[in-house]
Image (tube, rainbow, N blue to C red; front, side, top):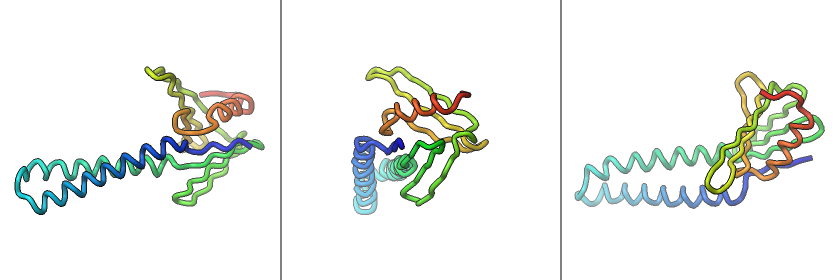
Length: 145
């Protein structure tokens, strides 16, 4: 059974960024409430920093998933919401791997379509065992969309 989890480096980087962005938000909020200088700038920056932090937090919480592949099934577990999804490999509607060349190498992402509107995304920079999952899909799923 292949187990693909989020990489520790990705989670650490996003967590450090979130700590910094929320620290900046609270510093701006405190400064906005106590010091009257640059009031308009602080009034604009405070909600912008909060929105950026919330968007990155949503990305972080959505990226935390454990994918188990094997025995003609794909099991996706989201630890934050405790939702477990079981997908039978013969019931897959399709899958596609996209490759983007960057300065530091390649960014590869596989999208697995398992219902008409549900897509499972895995990437080589954010998930462990990415190559093993793609190899399994090439072996077990004959079609590609």
